[in-house]
Length: 316
Image (cartoon, rainbow, N blue to C red):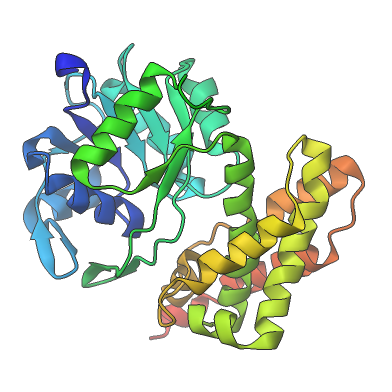
């Protein structure tokens, strides 16, 4: 870390989110200082073909998990939740005593898993809000990268931690929109609530954002799924209110009508979904606190059934 600022970034996961932010960062940071962690055929593909974002091709240095490398100033996780533990092992050589870690994963558990695995306090809380990046075989495209709220669990204005200040300066330098909420736990749960509602309903209905924005029945399903998260929040010490649901809907309404949630993209591509960290987490917490969550119980089974139908992909 030169002159008290972030200069080197390591990232694992170049899906829609990871590739979009890597491309954005490379506009201001030399690509040689953006290290991609990958192995096998994925690594060979990145070396030979790079990644394409909004029609532009980008090449970054690719490091296998066993390659020697200096610790990164900033380590970013942008994998799917079901690949997190493998990613933690793959990225360990990029971690040093001063490395700051950001997880751009969905859900409310990744920071704890990373912190417990590494035994480090350098993990900040973070989420991506309002991004509409879509990944296809031809690359990633987006119209808005939204904003990254991040920080410690609590962030008092005028008393931000040094880690938070360093990341804020890095985001300003690279043109990434960010927020530093007073209550980051609340923000994590708000994003979780959006995912539980919009991602799951869109996947089942095969609906882009426009359907969730404009169709009453679809929107009511989104709200009903989110309300089950709202019902669980007090038992977890989280202060969510009906106004947070309104905020979630406002975020949803700002997205491109033709854009698609990550779960819808996964279903269309016959990839595993993150239903375990959405409805699955709701079901676990419902059981833990004796709170009824009937809609998420149905959503969980329906999305599992969708995954079970993926054999159709083999016939194409």
